[in-house]
Image (cartoon, rainbow, N blue to C red; front, side, top):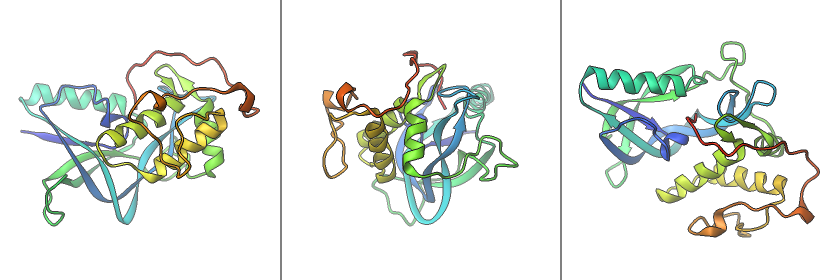
Amino acid sequence: MVFWVFGYGSLVWNPGFEVDEKVIGYIKDYRRVFDLACIDHRGTPDHPARTCTLEEYQGAVCWGAAYCVRGGPEKEKAAMAYLERRECEYDQKTLVEFYKEGDSDQKPFVTGVIVFTSTPDKISNRYYLGPAPLEDMARQIATAFGPCGNNRDYIFLLEKALFDIGHEDDYVIELANEVRKVLGVVGGVLKDKKLSLSGPSYVPTLNSSSMSPIKLRPLPEAIAMDS
């Protein structure tokens, strides 16, 4: 038996489990939204982080990476147990068709790919925050942190990971740049909203003279299991 899982968030750059194959590609009719709370990785119950989940949207294309796990029941069981712990804020597993980069979009590369998603209902899913104005989301992301690091690093790393696979997400770029505005970051942002991620200029820096009037708490540097 073999199983595939599709990564569209931190799994793109940090799968964290043993994989036998990684394939760049996309799924159809889903798009990223930062509508999910994270209270134990990059946020806390008092100050939840915002991480991305998927929203069904006809005609949308979501790029990411599909990972294959082979090697027998024990290996598959261990990988799934890890994923279920890591993706604990996501309350449902959806099976989707995955299309490989460069192949025809008429025939999926593999079907039945697992993707962790969340129920968009605040009653049935306590982690679902729902949409908010871009500025409010940016402010929340800029200041939240947890055991695995800063919420702002999550979106910057996602932005870079999508750039690295050659499939940037305009929504992620827009939100990341709004986070930079909140932080007062001035380096590395181009006027057409695109970010240069190919060199040292990607690393955010703070400019005290342009810092927004928000209170930033001390942010830990540790990077551990992410969601």
